[in-house]
Image (cartoon, rainbow, N blue to C red; front, top):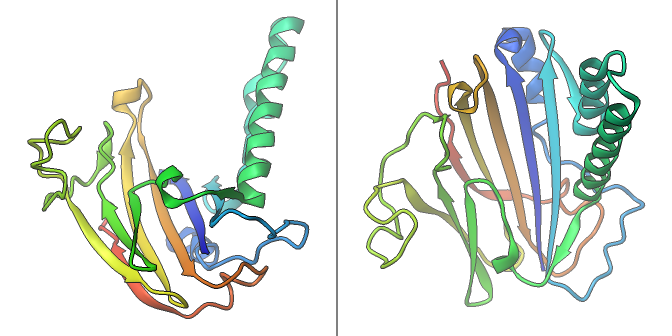
Length: 230
């Protein structure tokens, strides 16, 4: 089976300090799967998504804490009871999705996965892991390079040399980690300023799942696309 843990950190300019960087660093480690998560499944791929947010000069929040805080901040005094009820409903739906991501989800195979900048393919009992640039407005820096889909007829990125390369191959019993980051400009979305995102994607090709599958693995394969985010 294949186990994947996606750790994402979001922060803004007011957290760009040596102290803020130290606080962020401790969250990029592999995390243990909660004991209440059932790891018995007839499916082959387990994915856990953990999102963290840093704001206010350094404090780091889980996604659940962040969403609840943003809701309280943006709601303020109810403009209209119906509007306030609608906002609360949307918040509850997002929190339910966050809970599913934190607990992890099972998939039949890697073709069902949607992971930022990462694609995975089965190969001879193992897995090929590829890194590619996020082709969205505002995501910087733009990393140019070879793209495996460049000459593929009908490809969404045909004619554009977006960087896409194989990070590593994981055979049974091996583990690898990808690290990459982005500076995201808000001008394309109608907001001022910018924010930063950093990802650590831990991937383990194991016989079976266990609560410590990410924390006990030896990550012998590493791929680094960390850019200097000015």
